[in-house]
Image 1 (tube, rainbow, N blue to C red):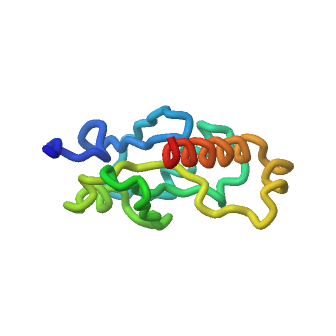
Image 2: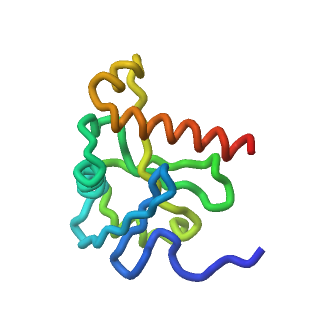
Image 3: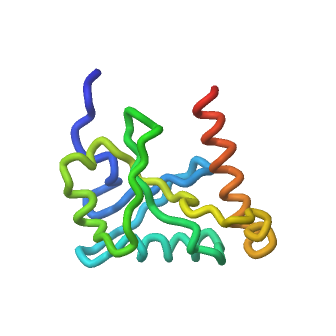
Length: 129
């Protein structure tokens, strides 16, 4: 198996690729000071989400879709993409913190609930064909 050269997290230099559950990819230009939280808050606006506390960015290993690494809100994007091991990962926007009662998410933020549904549905489909 031959690996592609370059960084799978980057669309262009200083432009992070973020994969959404609906199959879309969003590109974000970043500066040395840009944090994970900055990208998450931008996605909140673009996707019209209200309950953003359930979401985060994660790194998914390209050769093992069961390995996910949660990125901390204060991590600098530039530091994440510069790590040698990050070349084998792609960045996903995911619901990482499930509410105790998912129906409250449906009542409070239907868009976030639909995103969670799509994440579960697509994840199950990918695991079981």
